[in-house]
Structure formats: structure tokens, C-alpha cells
Image (cartoon, rainbow, N blue to C red; front, side, top):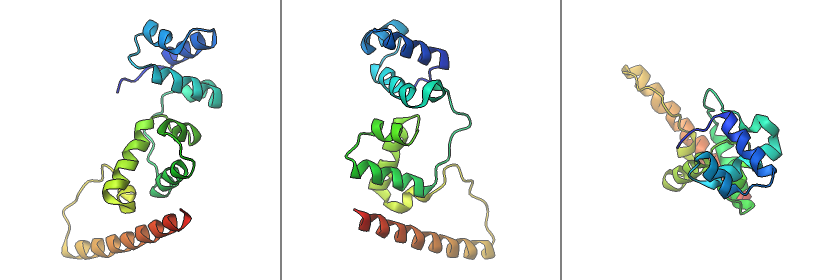
Length: 151
């Protein structure tokens, strides 16, 4: 996905607010998909210019948060874009990835941490790791049952 700088996003929003259509704005600024322009407009209307800024560093969302987003999306029959706007998530694809993980691996898949290095474990660390992962599995199962009950 191409990242657009703040100035490009702001210019697109300003053109749109001046009466230029989103498709025309996208074409004028060399943006392949006018969905980006519409998302920037929605973020601008809800969060102001701050909603157009690039976020650094990348956010690391908790498993509970991911579940609450997916739950809200399902309950409100919302699109990925609507959910992203509601929860101030700048990339709608993030939620789509969470949904895919959830569909393939269940609740537990949302609670894994990306980029965690695998270390050489001693026997003691392996045993502690197995106990911890069992605890994490039980917690995830408990959360899944709670979410299921909410549905």
C-alpha cells in the first residue's frame, strides 16, 4: 500500500470540500483509488487535521481491543471503513487482517504478538513457557466464550 504524506491528504480533503468530486481529486493527485480520498475526508470530519497524520511508531493493539472491534463491527453490521473510523484505526486493512486471523485461528489468533523473537529455551524455560501458553489458551478460550455470549 502506498503511503501518502500529510500534505497530499490535506490537499485532497481541501479540494473535495471546495466542491471537487473524490474521483476527480484522486485523478488530479495521482491517487489510484478514490476510496482513500473518501476515507481521508471521513477522518478529517471526525478528527480534524490530526486524523490525517502518519502514525509512528506502528500501534500494537491488544487482543481485547481487536475482539471489541470485531464484535462492534458484527453487531452494527459495519464495513471495515466504518469500524476503522469509529475506533480511530488509520488502515482499514488492519481490521480485515484481524478478521482473517479470527476466522482461521479463532480468538487465540488475535492474542499472539507479532515479531516476537523465538529464543533458545532451556528445559526450565520450555516448561514455564508451556504453562504460560496453557494459561494464555485458557484465557483466550474464556474471552471467546464471553464474546459468544454477547452475540
